Length: 178
Ligand code: GNR
Ligand code: NI
Image 1 (tube, rainbow, N blue to C red):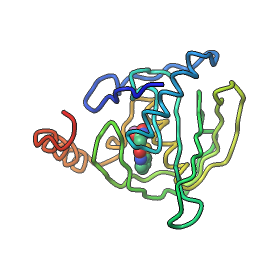
Image 2 (cartoon, rainbow, N blue to C red):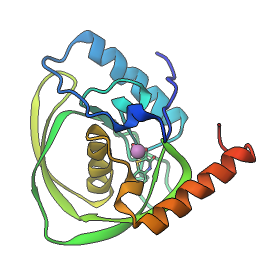
Image 3 (spheres, helix red, strand yellow):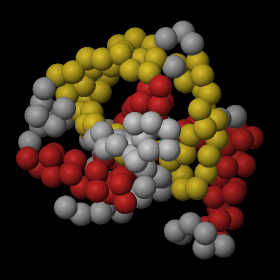
Image 4 (cartoon, rainbow, N blue to C red):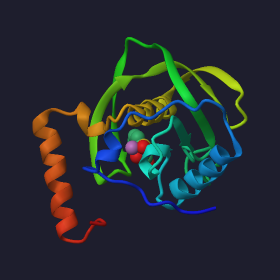
């Protein structure tokens, strides 16, 4: 396994449209293992393959939520290959999002609170599920990456420019990797 370098904005790679996976192979499963290692190391709760240099439609998510308040985080690694949103709720809710490709920056983004999604797992098995809560937020954030979209694209130009200015300042001060 390996920790892979994470591409950051404004790298043009992050704007590429990721290509569908035709068939899930051992090579994909190796990439998925490396994506989990990279995500846990970061640390983050989700990662799209394009963020580590592979513009293909693979996501990993582990919310690492404790079973009860204040408990130990429970591992729940999930793999989404060629994910599709089939239905979205009418109800949008705000969540304060961050992104490993926009390091140390956070802003509220509005998204539907429930989605019905379909995807393949690492064995090529099909899944279809209604998803809500933080998993719905994270899945939609990760699926945006497949279309070359970052969470800052959901903000007003004023707010987006504020976030990017703060990121530039933090890089200059060496508070995030340049
Ligand atoms: O680690 C992450 N945290 C997060 C918090 C709120 C909404 C979305 C996310 S995903 C992010 C990791 C990442 O950049 N995935 O693409
Ligand atoms: Ni992200």
